[in-house]
Length: 267
Image 1 (tube, rainbow, N blue to C red):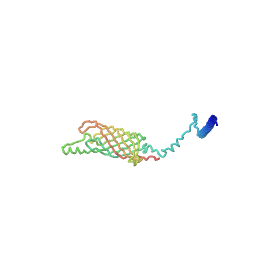
Image 2 (image 1 turned 30 degrees about the horizontal axis):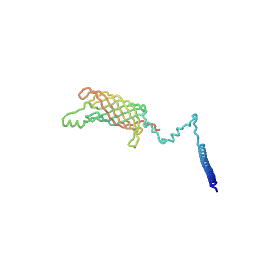
Image 3 (image 1 turned 45 degrees about the vertical axis):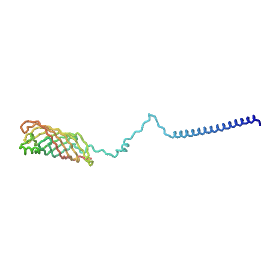
């Protein structure tokens, strides 16, 4: 074979090989692209089916909203098993109160003045009432006075020594609440104020008019009994031990036990 013919044969074979390889590569590329297209189509079809099954939300603003049943919500709430405590444990309307106890004069510096007290009240409403009261006192000198009399031979007397105190007050109940006794018992209480007029009698049998204001606390033991703590401030004019007219005032601290009657109507 001639060299020229051999070169021509090699060129023809090379061109044929390149054409065949190009065709094969094109078929492979087309197959890969078709596989990718099929995968994307299957994925889009799956998402479309899931979107169709998803419930749509109605955005129509004119649609009426469903009413809430508050009674059912309240019955199913966390506080459904809690009960409301009765607002007024001890009713006082059209009931009388009789109380008695001990009295003390903390304003008497040099003498221990103490005694007994009795009070009778009638309550027209839960807030308003009228009260009549009476106090009896006795006095004893304190240790400082006894030392002066024993060591210095001095006779010490109080300028104004009270023997009794009585009068009438307007009773006004302003605050009602409850307190706990060492996490053992709930005790209802009432805070009240008093204002009135009365008579003060000294140990020299002098009697004079008085004006008094006070504040107290009533702790209910039952619906018909209670403990009372009162602090009353009385103002009056009286002649002192030297015979001079003196404007004076006294504090009265009382602790008493009270009973209400008749019995209340139980519900």
